Structures are given as structure tokens and as C-alpha cells.
Length: 201
Image 1 (cartoon, rainbow, N blue to C red):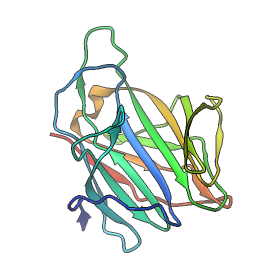
Image 2: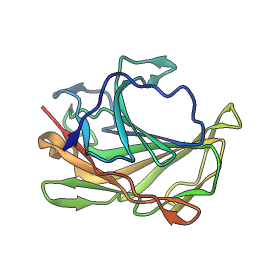
Image 3: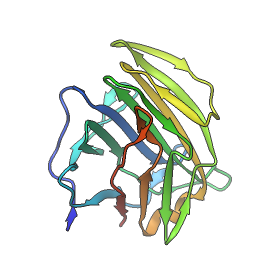
Image 4: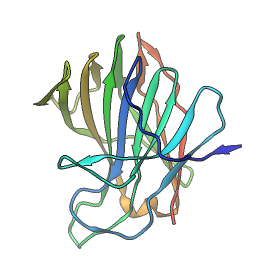
């Protein structure tokens, strides 16, 4: 059975969870040429997929534009994905942006991080080209970390963002795709995350 996002769901607090913000998009300003890609998962008693949360852009909340997967003490926020109409010469590589916010415990995120699945083929990121701390101990900060690392520690109380880049043109996403998170670990043990399947229109 397939589970689709329900109504708006915005967690009021992190609690004992890890918050992960994921956005797959293309750099540059361009108009969308498809409806947002909405994720779904196979039914799983340990996981819940809820829809309709908001993200912030330049400090302003958008209309509902993301979905949240929760389970096993982890919340994963996925920005709804759009294929963009780009001008000739614009960088059309697909990217995945992920923000982690651990509450407690020893968490890390390691290469190859995720797999992007398109038409039976699997792609891993070619690079981590941006790593940023956005908050620490409840205070807003902006601290750039060393990019291109194979493993990132995720200290409790910090919001850490990583941008993963794929050598896959974004127009390949137009017929649907899936995202598998493979590199999340807690206390050195892999944390299984359900496969996220995205439908596009």
C-alpha cells in the first residue's frame, strides 16, 4: 500500500528527533515547468509521511511547500521539487540540500550520502559543494564548514546544511524519480530511511 502526504503538518518542537530538510532543485532563478513533485512511501508502521508544511525563503514563510517523514526519532523535511525552465548556458545539474538538527546522541552523515534513482539507474552525488551551520544552541549563526568531506559530524543543538550535487540534468526528473537516504548514522549504526518516490506532472 502506498502512503501519500496528508494535510498540513508542522512539528512544534524537535523533541528527541533529528530534523532533516531536503530540497532538490536547480541553481538560478527560473520558472517552473511542472507541478511540484510529491513524495510517497510504502506503508510502514514505523514511519509517517505528512504534507503541507512551510519553508522559509529570505526569512519569509512560503505557501505549503514541503512534506515531512517522521519515524525512529527522526523528522525528514522534503522540499517539493520542481523541474525548471532554464536559459541556455545555465547550470542544469540536480542538487539535493539537506539540513540536520539533532537533539541528542552521536549522529553523522557519510558518503555516498544518498542515491538518486531515475528510470532504473542509480546516481550518487559527485560533490558536497556547500556545508553551513545555521544555528547553534538556539542562536542563529552563519558558519561555513569545509566542503568536499566524506563524513560530517552532526552535533546536537546545531542545524547543519549540506548541498549535494549530481551530474544529472534536471530535465531527467520530469518522468518521476526516487531518493534513498543511505548515509545517516546514529552511534555509528546506519539508520534505515524509507525510499521516497516522487511523482511529477
